[in-house]
Image (cartoon, rainbow over all chains, first blue to last red):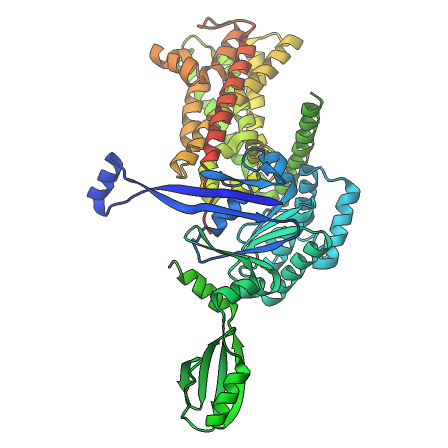
Amino acid sequence: MIDVQNLCKDYVLKAKEPGLRGAIRGLVRPEHKKIHAVSDLSFHIDDGEIVGFIGPNGAGKSTTIKMMSGILTPTKGCVLIDGRDISKHRKEVVRNIGVVFGQRSQLNWDLRLGESFELLKHIYQINQSDYDRTIDDLDSILGIREIIDKPVRQMSLGQRMKGDLVASMLHSPGVLFLDEPTIGLDVSAKYALRKFIKEINKTRRTTVILTTHDLGDIQELCERLIIINNGVMMEDGRLSEIVDRIAPYKTLVVEYYDESAPEHDRCEMTEHSGNVAKYRFIKNEVTAAEIIADLSRIKTIKDVSIEEAGIDDIIKIAYGQSG
Amino acid sequence: MRKACRELIHYLDVTVHMFKMAVMTVIEYPSNIAGWLISNPLQFIMGFAIIKFVVESFGEINGWNYGQLAFLYGLSVISHALSMIFFVQGWFMGYYVMEGDFDRYLTRPLGVMYQFFFTNINIVGITDLIPGVLVFIYGCVKSGVTVNLLFIVQIIVTLIGATLIRGGIYILLGSTSFHTRSAVDFGQYTQEIMDKTTMYPMSMYPESMQFILTYLIPIGWISFYPAASFLGINSRYAGMMIPFITLAVGVLVMLAAGAYFNMGLRKYESAGN
């Protein structure tokens, strides 16, 4: 159970002026500029949820996840994991979390993968039987035993990601944080990672919190989305609810036998090229069947299809709102 | 009390394991260690050869004869080597701060400063230990100190204190990176200063500098005061208690370093991605 209360993170930047004169002025009388990387974020995450943080680059996702995992100290507000403030009781609270950063490995570069696991076994005081059981468990999902004797420096990015996932789960944490885990992975590695996340969430009830730019990750994994932009929460809710709220429309694509296309008064023609016309309509106001019926009375229709508002639309709209 | 004991055992267990991993890493790249094994001892043997030359030309340095200088030099190099094994990362702390490498330590249930130094134990530092021990034993023989149990205990206490002083200074300098957010490699400068002040009798420097090196930057306690006491050479501070004062100074410097490090850690900003 995670409680985030009024979380803020400010950075102080020295404003730089151009040229040597500006540099000297900056030295003598520095102008400090406060950047609000994250402002006043509050939300609650229950055990066993999978929550996706999305937002454009520099939106504050990573900053948020780093405050939640104890890496950064919040300027204001707090993160409670199972009721305890992570920045005050770091050593105790982090025992129950696992962290994977897509762009940074926690594995020992020079040695075989197994040595990194052994070290974690000592750090987290995992007893041998639990350790063996966890490795067996994770092996069945990720096939980790195939690469356990390989030096980390010789691994592909996908293999290293598998290693990092196992490393983060060895101590069976209740919460797993993943910061852009699929970045740079190929299709099969992404598939393995998603399967892994779903599996540990189902069998171990691990709470998973991830940031991603990958639409596939969002569609496959995230029951709940938190959209952040400019350090402010834009949306928080189930994927389908967010879609309904900010993109409550569908698009009807109609193909005629010639290039003229009739208008319809209960929807908007968004595109018309060649024999194909696209009509956008609000889901609650009118049905596709009604529009098709009306149109076919005016003109013979060759073919129809319906496009749902995609996640990419949602993201574009959500990002655009404050952009 | 029992909790503290359990924690100590936990840290010892992790330390032993990290030490094993450090050895494995060195074995992984055997040609590296061959290089260090030649260049590092050579550096200190040459340094000592210069002292030998100076002493032979002038008779002595500031009242210290050849054997006594060997004793001082050896003592200094041994604590230098120990500080290289355990604390050399302090020199490069700025790079770790800039690269966001503290993230990993912060998400593990152990002290951050402990992890920073002990996940990076530098076994290669042993190559500095060899010339140090050789010159020190030579100095003991030449200067005719009585080697008994008390002497050995005092030497061990001195070395622990001296290593802590050096390590603490590396940490203090390295921790400035948290505030400046720049990566400055203090290693070379620190090493220059430490060499010049711990390998030769500090009494050859002006009073004001001696004052600074005794009270403000307590480098004098690393080798000069202990060596003077062991050898019965007249100095500002002398006596049986000196090794324990060195240890106390070491603990104090380390505590200050730890506090400054943790203060910096709160300002740690990781690295963007």
